[in-house]
Image (cartoon, rainbow, N blue to C red; front, side, top):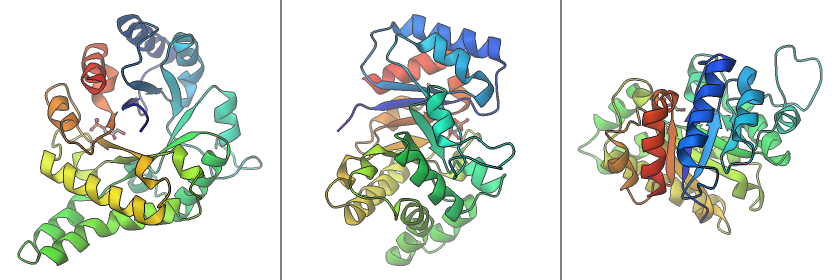
Length: 264
Ligand code: 13P
């Protein structure tokens, strides 16, 4: 299994100078040789170059928050996977819940994005997760364990089967799954260890079923209100291979402490 991952998704935050300061401070604190876990910074497109310069020579890698599902052409405002590679990205996040729910991205679009990203050599973080209503519906069937599980797992199954269906065993080794329950993102309500464990175990089983040869090697991250106060507990869940951090990755102190906890 590859190293554990600490990924900072800065979302639509930070101007270039701020991005330079934050990434520079992280490199300084960690030191260029830090390798206890793989750190990935995911700034907005406009700051990819400055962050790329700041982390160059260190073990920190650069990622993008989105990509378009075609390689080139008349798609005003979009950015393709080869362009991200050209801009220095090794990673890309696909299917983030904010893109699914605010920007209306569909499973079909996400499938195209995943396939192209992987074929361009980008390590691809596929985000999946249930909404609050989906979890509540499942929980309302608690007296019937099978019905509860089936309702709870169904959105995750659909998202993963749809996005990874076209991939082969070799391509799936460039995939990382991020379980981000929609109700936990930016809300301060993070999932409990048991909730995380249950979904991560399910994802592990599903990947092994879909990709018997390599599904076991796919890392599974947790995301959703990860903070310094809960990182130890989250990382103590055996199936958690790292974290995808939003708000807490915008502060040097908190992201540094989170990285150190992930690195162990
Ligand atoms: P928060 O850590 O701010 O809840 O965001 C999580 C997330 O969406 C990371 O991609």
